[in-house]
Image (cartoon, rainbow, N blue to C red):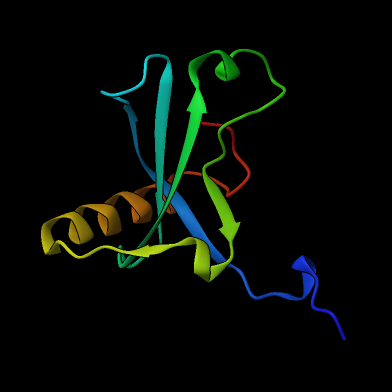
Length: 97
């Protein structure tokens, strides 16, 4: 049987950081992290895509584990965990941010 996307396990990641790219103009980098801060998911979006309701930035995403990477730095891991916890306390996963 062929496995489909809906059959795969996903993990929830919360928005923990939003920065402008130094290398690319009009590019925003969104970092989502697991609640423990141990894994992260990076998403890049062009600045013009933030206008209108067509593509909201959500408080949380469900992603495949292989789409995440480890957070090696302890300080960053703690910061991501604190921010993910704050986001989870203040927002529903599908809240536009």
